[in-house]
Amino acid sequence: MAFNMVASHAKWPQKNDAIFGLAAKAKDAIDKYGKDKVINSTLGTLVDDDGNIICLDSVYTELKSLPNADIAAYAQVAGQADFLEAVQDACFREYRPKAYIKAVATPGGTGAVRHAIWNYTNPGDSILVCDWFWAPYVTISEEFGRTVTNYEFFNEKGEFNISSFKENFENLLKKQKRLVTVLNTPANNPTGYSLSDEEWDEVLDIARENAKDSENRIIFLVDAAYIDYAGIGSERRKFFTKFSDLPENIFVIIAYSMSKGYTMYGLRSGAAIGISSKEELVNEFYYTCMHANRANWSNGTRGAMSVMTNIAKDTAKKKAFEDEVNKYKVMLRKRADAFVEEAKKCGLEILPYRDGFFVSIPCDNAKAASDELIKENLFVVALKKGLRFAVCAVSEDKCRIAPAKIKKVLDDLK
Ligand SMILES: Cc1ncc(COP(=O)(O)O)c(C=O)c1O
Image (cartoon, rainbow, N blue to C red; front, side):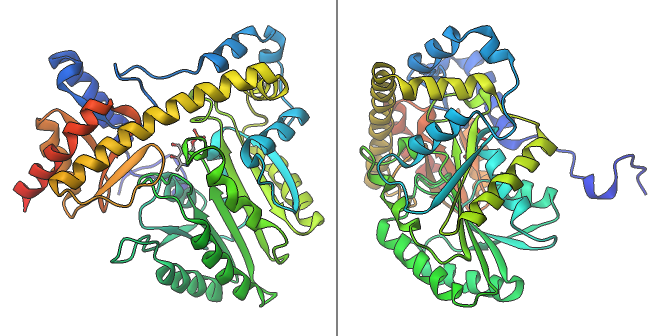
């Protein structure tokens, strides 16, 4: 038997991150063949048509104008008070739920996902996630001795599969009496799907029905990492008002991220925002997450918090920031439209795309397809149930070319 120094709960397969590995291969191909010849659709980072990461001027001008002390000093454990106000406005805009709400700063949305999974489940519990999902939900759950149960995201008509959701939701709740359900919407990674307001009503009706059993504790973790690239204006934020006046045993946590919306991926900032009809339950959330902050990373990135706060407080800065985000939102939309249009023309089946950084292609042999596509210098991530194409990382022209190439490889593999 292998000799280990790590304790048994901390022993994991010794493997590197597959997506970052593929991105490195794509970079090698670019160095070898030139960037015109390579389609690098791997990382979930917004890049320009030349393949350079987009860094919002409004954000980085603000960051670089901060006094050194404002970057160097520790932040409050829960986050700076003005940031905790600003982040709620950035998240909800005009659709703030009528409820008690409190935020705690976290290092990116990941920190908020971590807090929800750790603090709202018991050892051995399963969390509910759809079958097209961001892999770290599993990594985080495993780290804490929790598991993940998948429901089918789409039915045969390609619509949100509410009956699969209901079945799995009720099964787990019956067993555990406590359930964290992750909904990564709007602009789901990897599919680009956003739940409609009607679909949200259906989900919340099921939750309300099950909340009649006062022993049940229902927690929704809404992972809104890509919300700033969803819909027109604030339309994809309307669903937030549905979290008004919920029964006290339904608690909502929003994982808000500054990574994509502010192009601050590496600066690690975001928030967990708790929503409840009962004041003592948001206070409980706040102090529990504050304790968890102290226990894990102590406090967040102060300079990143100041960037959001300073932009929010200054009308001109806010306008410049919003105009910039909007420009890239339009760019993203054009790329995605090009991909969806060409997929339709060449008969490539894709999942319903509504918003955001990614489009997904369902297929049985994703790894083999991805390997074949590497030979064509097209780098696309293989998931369990298909391929993920990152429109955020590929120019509109290349988004037009890619679907036919993918279709051909999938047909050849049949
Ligand atoms: C679905 C999803 N949730 C959350 C995150 C969290 O990102 P971060 O921790 O950088 O905010 C990401 C980033 O890739 C994501 O894709």
